[in-house]
Length: 251
Image 1 (tube, rainbow, N blue to C red):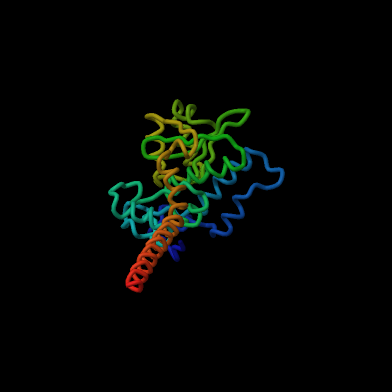
Image 2 (image 1 turned 90 degrees about the vertical axis):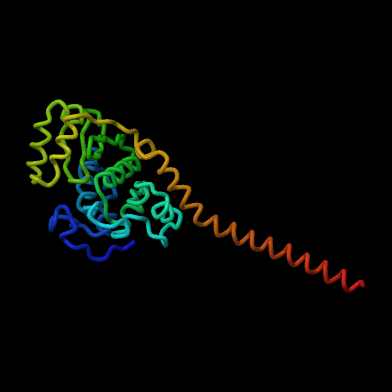
């Protein structure tokens, strides 16, 4: 699902957006030998933010940038996006980290789903955190919880509970990372109101998570079933024709 060249005007962070190629992103998501859990979590948070194109999804039609899954990628998800009337399929968020990286675009939900899956694969406990208008990830280390924002590429010192009670510290962390008027106010306002934990991707998007897995199996099984059905019908018709021919021959 190559997007080709994405115009800078389409990106939230303009020239600072997408500083890694897909190949570089894939290689840098691998855990280094001897790398500690905190160091790895911090590094991949920034890698994901640098490798995913932050497009303004709502400004473009679902067909642009493959927001609707292309028919050649998965015709079942394509059909759901075109005709189900369900917004989540029209502008689709992959639960598969491989597919998410391959597409190369996303918003906070895509980045957080990808980060959560990558951390799980490396045995690092984490939870997805949602606030009104934004999605992040929280990891639990021996010392304390740590909030990660793979959409902005910001690693926080504390967990969601701390920043909910000390919201000015969250604003300060975004500003220190170089974000001022880039949409971080949505996160600050959201976390100041409320937050909710989800135990991984399967909990966060339960039905869609399993539907996606099944759809990638079904896109191969359905053609095989149709071929088998056609072969069965052909054999039945052939047998029937032979019986008719034998009947008239005896006469």
